[in-house]
Amino acid sequence: MFLVYLVLALCAAVAVWVMVRRVLFRRRRRQLLAMPLRDAWEEILMRNFGLYAKLPEEVRRKLGGYVNAFVEEKNFEACGDLEEMTEEMMVTVAGQACLLLLSDRFGVFDRLSTVLLYPDVFSADSGVDRDGFDRGVENRLGESWGTGSVVLSWYHVLHGPEVEEDGHNVVLHEFAHQLDQLDGAADGAPELGSQAEYRDWAKVFGAAYERHAQRMERGRRLVIDDYGGTNPAEFFAVATESFFERSRKLRERYPKLYDKLKTFYALDPVAW
Image (cartoon, rainbow, N blue to C red; front, side, top):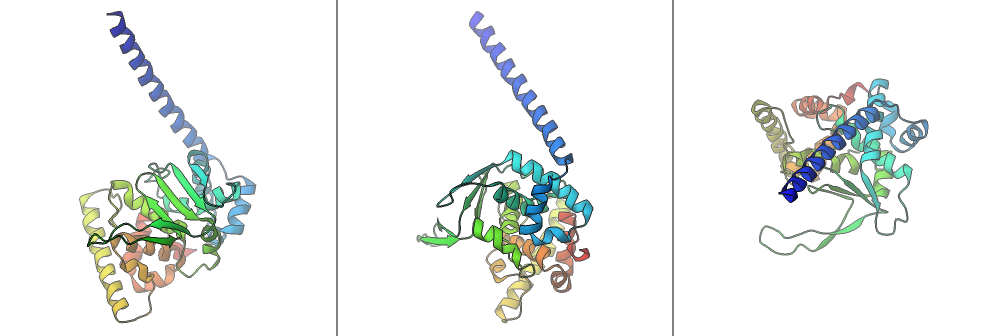
């Protein structure tokens, strides 16, 4: 009987400890979100993320809080020939990724635990095609895993934002996939609030996806990169890149899509 009481007491103690840790974690996160970005980190973002300088002051201030939380909460690992993980690397990744969180709907990528950074492109197994044949290994700039990791090329994290209107940003792309994967499926429809929102999202994105495919077939000039034609998940990720880097052109070509992303991210890049 004593053993039973002991086990129950241990279980209760563990439960209390888990609750205390959660309370402390949430309290610490609130503190981090409220803290201003330290000067050295702001200098890093000014230098490495050109879009940061264009952000309104209130957006920069809010983004800074998310960067604080992201850098403290996530594990960063140097891979391949990358000798060490530096503060510059962590802040540069966080500043771009957290731009997607300012709607306050998605925590701080709460299912993400680890960011893996390679010095440049890295090799990855491409899996099998629809017929079951091995597609071999290919070089990649980034990957997003639903199991809690994002893999990135540091070279492209650093140099991708240099050309601000090319619609290519590997961090925005892969972390858009993270948002898409929150509901357990990478299908181009991230976690939304209601069935009505899902229906409206499907209608707007479905029409834009079809139009994008038609323009590709006709060889027309594209606002959204042709990689977005791969599948709806890639279309959402590439459309996110265009939303931030080609905002005016995206609004002109796909006004409903732009408005949907504007609501989703609670941001209006055209106004910047």
